Image: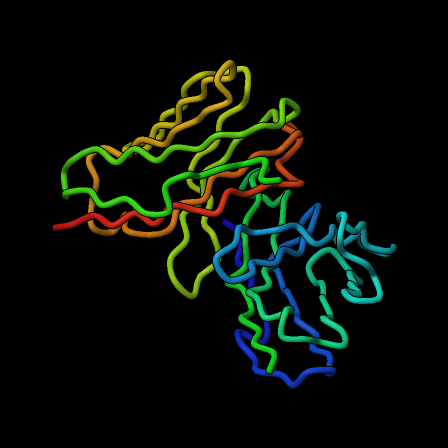
Length: 115
Length: 115
């Protein structure tokens, strides 16, 4: 599978602040996505990160809360803005379209705790 | 409204025996189904997939069965090994062939294989 890294791996943040999560892939990929896994819940797709254009958000997620950048084919960032305790989750990036095939591969995740 | 359901949050199996993990879905538009395995502090790892045109796909010890009329799929692991102990997620996508994306996940089943 593609080697996907995320920074930071975990963080504890104060209410009202923002955190930017980075996702780096070791090869060019066709598509990149951001997911959230709240405690005890399934993974939920936040948005598709589009290279060179605005991200495509799923129902219930908006750009003001989760701004996303994808400046090239190997890197993307997700910002969690104006955080509240309800944003405490694991945030994961994933990719499709690597040399290894067309399946979706996930990064290790970023565990965010908001106090 | 959960479109992909894994009704068993946990399952314990003796080493060497068969593990059967079940998944039900409600959306008739789903065309491609995947199983992911997740260890603690890691991202989900792709395990096996099946297209809706098939009813079975096998890869080594792992076999996925799809019953479209019942909107049900299952993952069989034979023989089960202690290293298989992990959380298994069922996922579905309305797209296949060109790559899996817009995945909808179940909540996962925690498999424990007892030595």
